[in-house]
Picture 1 (cartoon, helix red, strand yellow):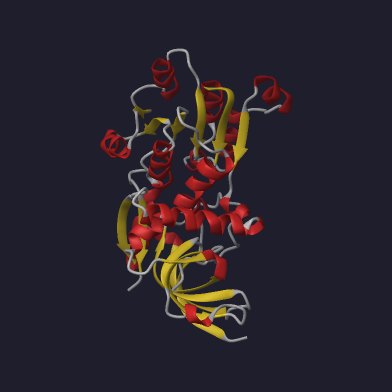
Picture 2: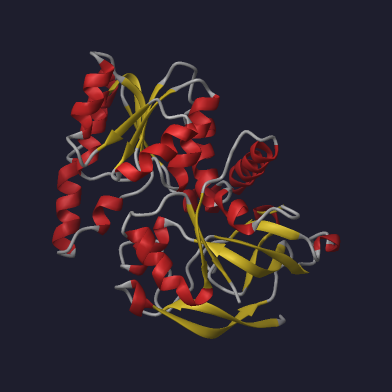
Length: 345
C-alpha cells in the first residue's frame, strides 16, 4: 500500500496546552477501497480534544497520537471503490482522530462538498452542528412549545442548539457563565438568559418556570448539574448528557473523578420509569463507529440548513498552526464563543 508522508500537530504528553503538542513528520497508509485522502486547509477544535490532552478522554489513542475529528480541504486520492471524479473537490470532512494532520484519510461517506464556503464557517457544521442536530432532531426531537435548557449556550454546540430549538418553536433557556455572552445568545433567539455565576441556575430557572417544568436539558457539563437538571425536567422530560466538562476542572486526578461520579449519584431504572423521566447519553464517536449512515445524514442535513439560510454558524476565532496551544487554552478556559479553527501554513 502506498504511504503518505506528511506532518501533524502531535499530542506527545498530557497536561498544559503549551507543552502537550509538537509539530512532527508522520506517515499514513494510503486509502482503502472506500476511503479518500484529503489535503487539509484547516481543522476544528472540540472540547473532546481538550479532554484528550489532559488525559480524561478514554477513547483517545495512546500517546503520542494525533487528535481531531474534522477538517476542510481538497480530496487528493481516492480508494478503488470511490468515484475518482471526487479528486480535487473541496470538502468538509469527519475523521476518527487524525484531524490535526496536514493529510487525513477518512471514509467517503464522511465528506460533503462545500465549494467556496469559508473554512471557519464550514467547520461549525461538522462535529458541533452534527452533534446538535443528532440530539435535537434525530434522537429526541424538539417540539413546538417545549421548554428547553441549553448549557454552555454560547459555545459551538450551544449556539446551534438555540437555532434548532427556535426553528421548532421552543422556549429556550440559555445558560452562560459570562455576561459578555448574553448578547450573542439573545441574538440567536434565546428567550431567557441564565448566568450561573450570579446565583444558582436551577433557582433562576424555577423562578421563570413558575411551577412548570422543562421538557429537555442539553447538558455537556454533567457532575453536579445532573441532579439539578433531573429535578427541573417534568414527566416525559429528558436530560441529554453529551459531555463531562465539569470533570476537566478537577485538580486531584483519580479523586476528582470519584467526586464527579459521586455528584451524579446512583440511577435506578425503576425510578425513571415511575417518574417518566429519561436520561440519554450521546457520544458521537460511537455513533460514527456503529451508525455511520446516521452521522452522514446529519452532516448533509446541517449543511443543507445552512445553505437554506436557516443556520448561522458562529465563528469563535481563527488561529495559525503555530498557535494551536493558544487555541486549546482559550477553549479550555471557557472564554470563547462559537467555533475555533486552526489554519495550516
